[in-house]
Image (cartoon, rainbow, N blue to C red; front, side, top):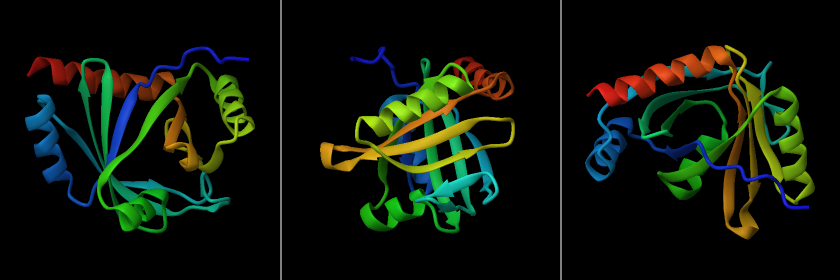
Length: 168
């Protein structure tokens, strides 16, 4: 059975230098404003990586290009898929994200991805209730796909960032 279309809502890069990546994407894509969130903690009681509790910190920068969210992730400390990506491949395009409409749909989309042969690499819940999971089908050229459920509280933050981008 062919799944319903799931258009990406986000493109994300992993970098060791947020300022350099912000500057380059601003020049190449015309992004006007970035919102930085330093020291985002992914805690072991709510996050896992390769089936084990994950405890790491990353600096995040967000912006929008139209309705597409752009995310930059700079690992700070701890073992994570971001740090492993940076160590193994260097800075670069890391993932795209698709959105689940509710928590039940999030679990169904994750199950579907695994049933289709993708490996569950990481998952977690952020403060505010945003659920995320990364699946990978690297042999098929899909390094990471993020599936996310974005509750209203987090959506309002994203909407604010999008509005700020359009005001510049």
